[in-house]
Image 1 (tube, rainbow, N blue to C red):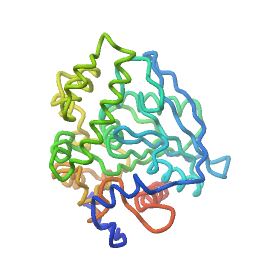
Image 2: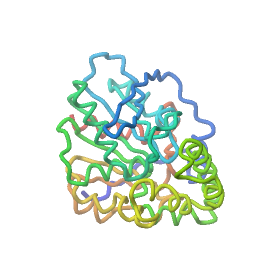
Image 3: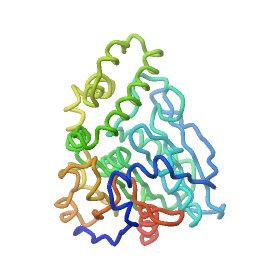
Amino acid sequence: MPVITSNYTPPLPFKNGHFSTIFPNLLRKVKGVVQKRERVELDDGDFIDLDWSHSANKKSNRLTIIIHGLEGNGQRQYILGLARHLNQNCWDSVALNLRNCSGEVNRLYKSYNAGASDDLEAVINYIVKKYSYTQISICGFSLGGNLMLKYLGEGRLIPSQIKAAVGVSVPCDLYNSLSEINKPKNIIYQQRFIKNLKAKLYERQQVFSNELSRSDIKSCSSLIDIDNLYTSKAHGYKNAIDYYTKCSCKQFLQTIKIPTLIINAKNDSFLGELCYPINEAKKNKNLFLETPDYGGHVGFYLSGKAYYNEKRALDFFNTLQ
């Protein structure tokens, strides 16, 4: 489908991409979401934790699976914001905590990555088998959006209950996004990512001392260093470039067969030119691309409780009933 014209226009301070990105991370507090955790045991002996929140309508047959971004979890404000908006509008929601993101070190050396679509498939199959939802949608943020879009376009059999998907602030080309994050304008974000990822690696090193050394972790000074040391090797890729190349969702967009919306702001400082799949959207009738002028990275502020991406996702899901 052609690129959608966006009508998102935030208040003046939120027209700045950095302000939009930082504000919800530091100052947004979402209240009123009650989550209940469920552990899914995986075939390889590891686990994934799900955080459920339900609508007031206890007989809802509609569910949205929400996937967080890099170093996120089911309690991030952007996850809770969407969950609350869905719950208030007769949708149940379940936040998927990717491996090693639910507050407990996972059992296996491998963790999560932007292309771990097999884990998403396992969770979806589990939910479809155990529960009786007839309408399931998926919403992925940033890295979680890339993972979701890869899952949808890889050619696997998608359960008929999956009706629609929305990706928010998606780095459709992983290396292109990394190149943007490495620019001076993003030094604060870059250093925060490196600090948090290295902290996680030190945590894993205590459990997997034969696979990781503290000196190797300490020597990492960039995101690509971390992906060369751990992310690629732990998940079967030759190196970071091989990982980025094989896991970028852009190459899978043309084969997505369910209605899917991507919302990528033009002033998202994490996204380079290749992260806006305009040609892919024009060639696939199921793919909708909305590129608002504003929004930063997962920062689509609106006055009131719900953000623009939350309202937009719900509207998109509801039109497909």
